Image 1: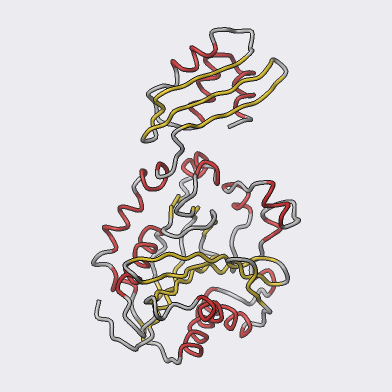
Image 2: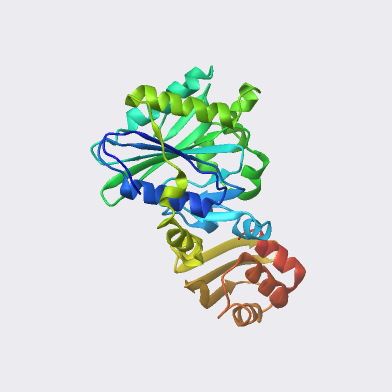
Length: 324
């Protein structure tokens, strides 16, 4: 990559592959030079993105995501699970440690929104809102001593997918005094139908140049592709996406008309190595049959409900499905 010092860069990916886009972002951050921050814009085909330290099974409906051919991605930064589609524009500020300034970077987003007629404000740790409704979430990570601040701008996302694929704790919803995740977020196009991806991208570049003393030099995203494909392959690896933080012990408990049950699983490398079922169900063979149909197989909710069907019948299986 032929980057020059003291030159601000604007880059935009034409790929909608989330693994490639995140890999390019990582490479750009790793190679950024002093005094030469990069604003990188990108968008993904339908994707659920989870934070680096999240348990994907707790944060999203993994089986539905895989069934529907939606991408499931674990990013390099922390924070929560988010939905991406082509109605969402992602931004990344790739900077050296000395150039990294979250407030300055956030001011680029706020200034761009003001230029489009929106009174946006930063709230909490990492959200940007308009009239109390979130349209942008932000997260941060470091690579090779350099830093990346990335986030989303929701322009015309399919909001129905938020409820289809993401799970949100009741505690988090109560904190924001709303009844569903969909009511907390808003698309810019809902507030102004004339706003589209091109207008937002142009506004971001203009504000970036204004705040960083432009003009910016265009940097093709493909400039990162000497190293990006190998990193993208690592991002696609199931061990990184699903198994990275899968708990060694997974426990489910519930109480039903027929009694109570606790299913405790030991999981290693996404394979169930042990299964213990404690229950006061009248059928004493259920624990043994459950274990026989689970141990040694890849972890999934469907595996557990299928084992419950074999062990205790359809009613038992339907009850078990409600606690997974």
